[in-house]
Amino acid sequence: MTTAEKPDVIELLVAQHQHIRDLFADVESASGAAKQAKFEELRRFLAVHETAEELITHPRVRMSGANDVVDARLEEETESKKLLAAMDGMDVSETDFDPRLRTLRIAVLAHADAEEREEFPLLREAADDRQLRVMALALQAVEAIAPTHPHPSVGSSMTTNLMAGPLASVVDRTRDAVAAVLRKG
Image 1 (cartoon, rainbow, N blue to C red):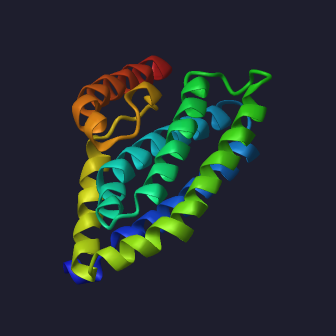
Image 2 (cartoon, helix red, strand yellow):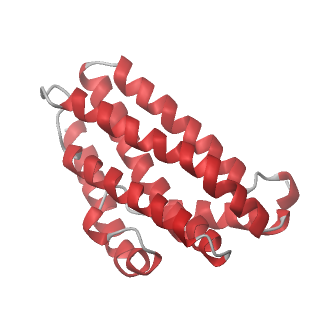
């Protein structure tokens, strides 16, 4: 497959936003251990997805002069990270889990809609097809090594993600591996 046949970064992110919608629906419709597993999948996907956007797409849109749009998205991401961090490690059977999940879903989906409506058109204007396809590859590379848990204290800037992200990723992926072994044992 050539680079021209691969999805561009916007197509990839729109597909990921749909996957996030589907994951929320999966968590909400499941129960017990299946619900816990689906929430862990959602938590991981959101943490990785947001880190990749912060490092790849937001800086490119900011270069086009749309600081207000990017600042608004980063603020939304920080709020979502705080909500997700508060839920990280929660048991889905806890009484406040479902209300928190609904709040998180509303925030995350509003953020995704705002990106698609406000940020992605600016990104499409700022980059040609080849650049958008290369950005998709870069996004996937970042996702392969991004932290798997929310880290709101790190913030949502490119600089802090580049400095703190690698250590957070190693810690998160180690934590995930140990948890998986403990679940099996």
